[in-house]
Length: 219
Image (cartoon, rainbow, N blue to C red):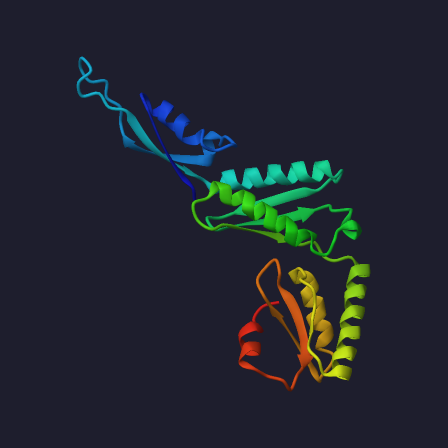
């Protein structure tokens, strides 16, 4: 996690100097302090030295700032959404509950939200950090819509023998596409790209390549 350094005439002043670099002030149980050098008053100005500390941000701080950011976002949208955030040194996972506006959400909403929160969280970490949202189950209307779309694409690929690439989709939607394509014996589907731009590709099953074997892992 992020480490900050501060100096001051006292240990307390050194800690305060270190954490003031953050725009969001951490609470006392959200960071750990290591004393690098104790202060010394000296005599007649000789031998005096400042206190030096190292302050390391804990995962509880990351959890709080993400919860607060989500709360501001959803309150501004007029939604009542509960969020549970669990973070470790590399990843924060978010579970959203009581979303009553799923039908109004764009299919890439959660991907976009992950991207924004990842950028925000990386302001408080020293290494590359990621935020993952455990997406709520799709409503039945959206699921049927994706199944119909996948079936239409399957028939088109069988007719033209041309590969088809979907627009980027979240993992929950890609899974439905894959499950639908499995029903067509002459076709295969796989995912390519990195989040949040991961896409599903559909093509004839007889076309096998090294690229296909490398990119078939994951949804």
